[in-house]
Length: 118
Image (cartoon, rainbow, N blue to C red; front, side, top):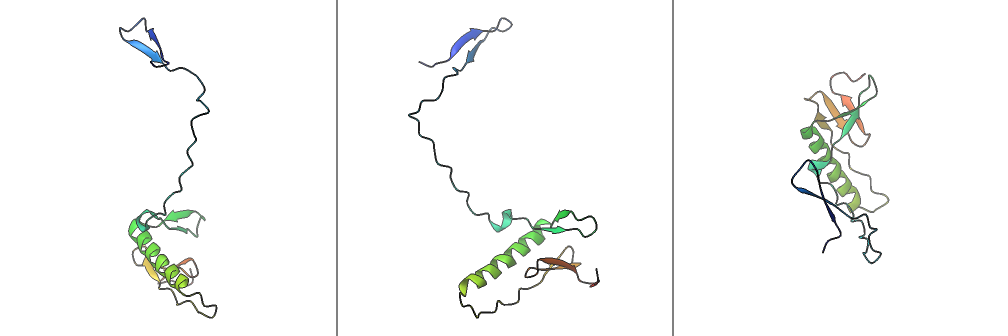
């Protein structure tokens, strides 16, 4: 038998059920929070800071996926070599934003291809 009380709404022909406001018993075990799984490359979004008004702007999905893939490959190369004398390989530049900019992941910069001074 449930702990709910049944009342009748005077403006309706159906009964209303209200749940009891009892405290949950202490016997119930609280479940441990589960850890989040790592995000896939498709779920990651990269951003760049617009130099004009200093706001963060999201790369399009295609560019973001290419940046994340290059970043994961770079991290994999770094993790494979634990040698202290190992010089990390130069990371490739990723062309983004319609071919107008390069992303330099080692410097964490998005630079213009055509106007180097900007």
